[in-house]
Length: 80
Image (cartoon, one colour):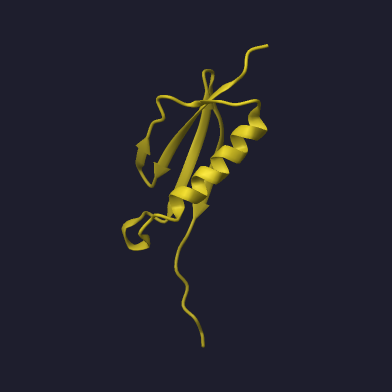
């Protein structure tokens, strides 16, 4: 059985950065972990005022989309 190859496209609002290389991973669970780690790493470098308020990694294989991991953020005022 072939080892799956996954692609991790990054969507920041309306901007899509397509992953042309992808990664060979053992299974979908490994792809879910990779997407979550990549999402967290990408989100920490965002400038909140310059961002759309959402960031997602859209994971696909050679057959098409599999799942989407998203990070939503905003600001809230303190009532203190």
